[in-house]
Length: 276
Image 1 (cartoon, one colour):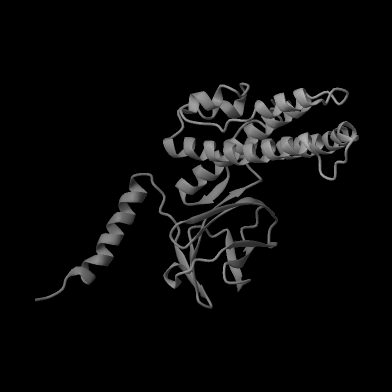
Image 2 (cartoon, helix red, strand yellow):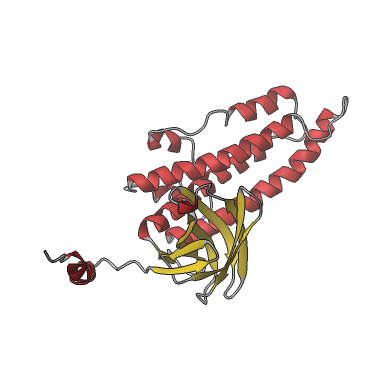
């Protein structure tokens, strides 16, 4: 009996490709490479993996080069079949970036997939897997909106009145993590062109957004906790330590929020300069 599976594989693949093209769905780029014991799979031509090094039994460093000719602001990687990393980067053309990732403990998962990149030089500019591009955009949108809310909380604190009650009230304002449904999570954010981008978003985009909010929520919460008991605080100087810490923390959060805002303006195709 003749096995026709192999003979049919190529025609079927061509039919599927033709269907994707004529249906208006671009075929996703795929390429493979091997570096030592690691298999590298690409869904974008924008970057190349140039080096993979074991750091220890649990971590590995991955060095990528931007070969797109355009600035890259975020990089999406998969390690094995599960672990996903969205790395914020400022990667100019031909520049390299090294990221440290967890090392799968089974060799069958020694696969690095370069899923997608977000470019920083044009509205909604990206390359790679469409689902990953959407996830990365909306995850960063969540970080942008939550970082802006964090700035508003720090800005509302009066350096002249940093007693326990006021600091605890600020902490309580972010004491609960954002939860579903999305509308409930959004209720605490001011209206903005970026927030409007969530209208009609897919379930995957909404999940990514909540994930981004949650990431910066943790950062803001930790920062407020440090305000309550600043590092190296000593008895009798708590308030002065709080004043000093607030003067350092606020501009740091402001700078981060501005950066996220600018990047999300580009990611989401919003007019640059729109602010909360």
